[in-house]
Every structure is written in structure tokens, then in C-alpha cells.
Image (cartoon, rainbow, N blue to C red; front, side):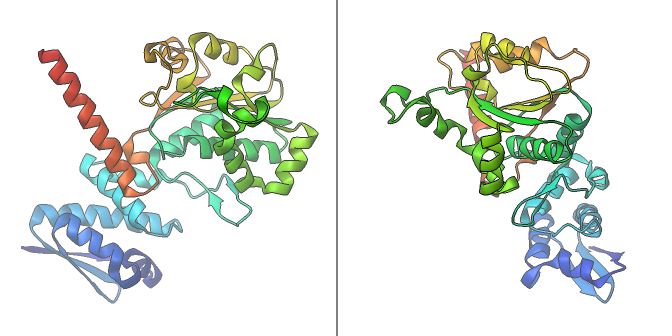
Length: 325
């Protein structure tokens, strides 16, 4: 058994680290099988040498986040655990605390993981960005935030959000209403993100002016989109032809962000996904960046990470068994 002491300059950082009723520090103690106590401005960690070493690395990283003004919670604690496991916890200092934009409720939207920061930086610096990864990694939400930021700064005149209206077990023809009514359910996540960033009234006003457009992918054909921030969501459900059509809509002073999860392809033949093909075709093209998210970048409930990992293991096992057969 050894003991390690970490000195913390500010008491509010210790309070943030420990959490209400020590809920945060209890997670760390359970993860590394150590005892953690606070004595004045010191944090004392007791346990086996290797576990104390890992716990101290995690606490140092969390203190870095706390000093950046982050509220320590279960999500970022578990994220730090994953960084410590990989030996990359020092990279947490690269997470800047600059917000992208502020929602109508006053929430500051900013990257919460290194993968998200890499994604946001790519959107800033590249003309076309592909964000590939599982649900809950913020692909759509952060891209909409970046679009709103660009629009508010008058860097673009228009925000265009689009998705392919692929039928996942339900036929469009059986849904009530006209075509717009039929495709609106597919576009709902995009509406929700815009409502949160802008508020329903501002969204309605800009939508009426034609400054914000939310439409199915088929509506993009034949257009050239200048001075626009264009987001293609759920791109794994595009065909090869649709993806090429969409990419060639790019006009002057515009940005394109394409998001998708290649493990959730609803097309009849998943091998024909336009996103899968685009990742191969565009990987060496200048001014295009392909960002891959992992389960570590999931910022939803912990179970979402566990579900993603469970499915990955299941499919990997199935693939290995198939190979043996």
C-alpha cells in the first residue's frame, strides 16, 4: 500500500471534483480500488501502487477540466477513465473551453471530448468534413451549432439541412399528408437542434425568409449552393449516385458537413452506401477531412457506450465464427 498526495490550489475545484455526497470520487474509488480523502487543499490517494498511479492520473485530468470551468460529472469521469486506460490523459488539456454558440436556454455548446474537438476544428478549417461514428457522439448537434455560429457571424447567408428519406421498416406511401408531411419525421432531429440553438420564433422567421432550409436530399438535385452551410445527416443511407449529386452541389463560400454511422445502414444492400464509398474516394482529397468517432466520444447515458461496445463484440464474434466456417 502506498499514499500519494495531490495539492489543489482552489477549494471550489476540490468540491467540483468530489461532487454532491462524494458521488464523483466514489466512482474513482470504485474504478481503481483506492481510498481518496480530502485534507484542506490536499487530496490523498491510498491503495496498491499501480491503482494509485492510475487514480492520480485520472484526478489530475479531472482537475484540468475543473480549472477550465467544466462541471465534473459521470460522463466526463468515465471519459477520463478511457483516456487513462490508453495512456492519453494528458491530451485533456487540449480541450479548449471556447463555446461554439449559446442555446436559447443559456447552455454553452462546446466539444466535450477530444474527438469532438477534432471534428469542430476540422469544420472550422476545411470546406468538406465527413463525421463518421456511432449514435450519441454529437455529430449532428455540433455541426448544427457550427452552422448557427457561421450564420450569426454572417459568414454564410443560408443554412441547409438535409437527410435521405430512407424507409426503415415503414413505407412513406402509408404515412398521412403530402410529401413534406411524409418526410418531416425523418428531418425531426435537425429541427430539434435548430430549435434549441435559435428558438422556434427565430427559426420560423429565418425559415420563412429562406435563410434556413430543412429538406429531403432529393430536393438538392440541380442546384448550386453558394454562401451556404450545408449539412447532410444520416448519410450512410445515401446511394452512390445521391452522394455524388450532393457533393457536386457545393458552391462558392460554402461548407459541407456530412454525418453518418456506417453500422446503421438501412439501404437494401449496405455495400452500396454512398457514405462508405465517399470515405474511400475522398480520403486523399485536399480540403476534405474525414473524422472518425468512437464509443469514447459518446456523450449520452453510459449505457449507450455499453450497448455500442456490446454490439461491436457481437458482430466481431460473428465475423470470426463465419471466417472459421
